[in-house]
Image 1 (cartoon, one colour):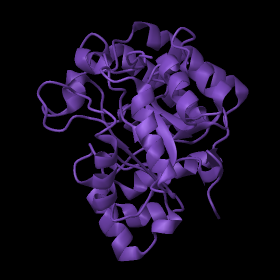
Image 2 (cartoon, helix red, strand yellow):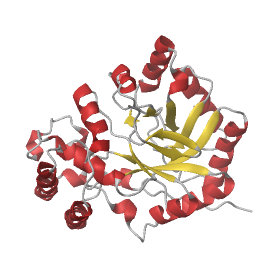
Image 3 (cartoon, rainbow, N blue to C red):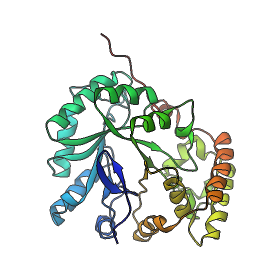
Image 4 (tube, rainbow, N blue to C red):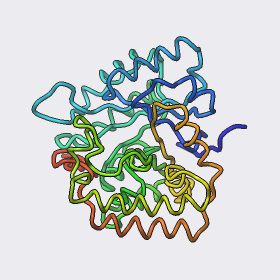
Length: 324
């Protein structure tokens, strides 16, 4: 049976997508009906792997393909690079790696703090006119940046970290949800199951491998970990009522936040993929949706930042004003 769908722009996409940061299971993703795929030029060789899959299967037209650009590769001086002259070059590189003629949804991965968003999005819009991109998206931008960008060319999706473990995108002072909903922009949620915390294997910070990148995140400090685990236990308690996994509850909770919310969990395990997609069958009661929010809001007030300092500077990013 086909998976439920939601809209990005005027296109129906599977309501849970696949965050292709680790993509050894593309055959299984497709065979299980998930055709909404998200990657980026910053995710190692993932664009090339997807390109090889397209070449092997001939299924490009079956996939809603999203990718991103904008991180400065190999630069020691800056994290983001998105001047208008670089935009077409970045796209051509992605198209080449993917082995495709066009991309369905093309995101700016982070706003360039040195370039007015109007210039970057204007250059991206030229690629839409050229038929190489269908829809434009932005990731981790401010409400003001979204509004300014949308005035240049319609923005079809914003991508943000969103889960019971990351509610700051809902903050009225941030204003991003309000802006997105006023403009009819889909909200694509990355890390929707709490960066792997709901799997049950992690009982303390010591369970994270030495090379695990989560170790550098303030939210995963020794001080904050007990607070995180308290939220995990709350989600687990609700999951037990439904004979479901905590990850499924987190995804079902996100799906309950509105038809414009599209989670994109990533995994390299087929069993986790099937578990994620089974979240469609889990309908939480209004009381349990509210209870998850209650325990999440308590945790969110006490947890540390989502990223290290330099990374935090790029969240809800602003850009300089466009000079007349």
